[in-house]
Length: 280
Image 1 (cartoon, one colour):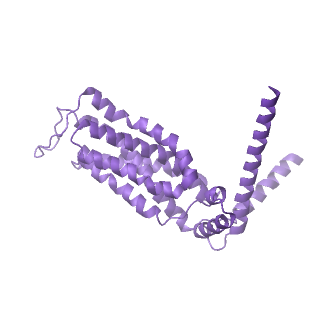
Image 2 (cartoon, one colour; image 1 turned 45 degrees about the vertical axis):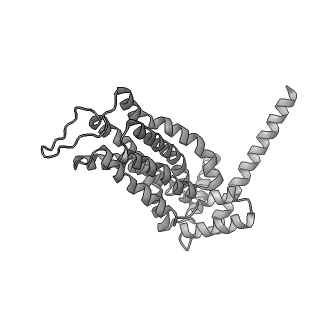
Image 3 (cartoon, helix red, strand yellow; image 1 turned 180 degrees about the horizontal axis):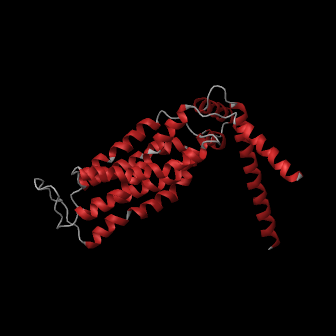
């Protein structure tokens, strides 16, 4: 019984502590801006089925007055590459971005992310050969890989404990919305190349809006080398992300404490590994 009472007391303490951290409207705005990359992810997947049909040499539109014909008729191998090679790009993007988001910050990477996404969709929209589409699809995949590694971390680090789960769930909603949106556009007789131009809109908006969004306070504490600068930027970003009555200093202390525990764990692991190697 004592254990149960102790656990219940800890839960109450944690709840009271989390009540001190209240998100401002900017948390939701920043989440929506970052999720524009998830929208692009969904459009990348949704575009595949449309292109597979329209790149077929026998494709005809449902509109009798529309005599549009695809400017490219790829062979079977090229069609398979166009449909699937973006997954290779996503592996490359996910592999490379771990270092980049720690080195440059989550916000900056999300701004830069608009470049591969935007270039990919423009190449698809302007393509006059299958090879250009394939290169564009690889770049699309790179954008997807970077997005799927960066967005969840950014959302988790700017949100408060009480809304963190809800904010994280929106990734699937935005990805699904991207697939839905690109198929709706196709219903209105926008073909695979036209859709490339439409798909540049979310990435452009993301690049512009993320420029005005705050950086992750957790990243500021963990990766800004100058302690005074780290403290200043962490406090500045938290004041934008939290309401006036939030306990900013307590949250900063919690982030610093987590960093110290992480550093201590890494140091202990390094010492243990050294001891094991010396015994061997």
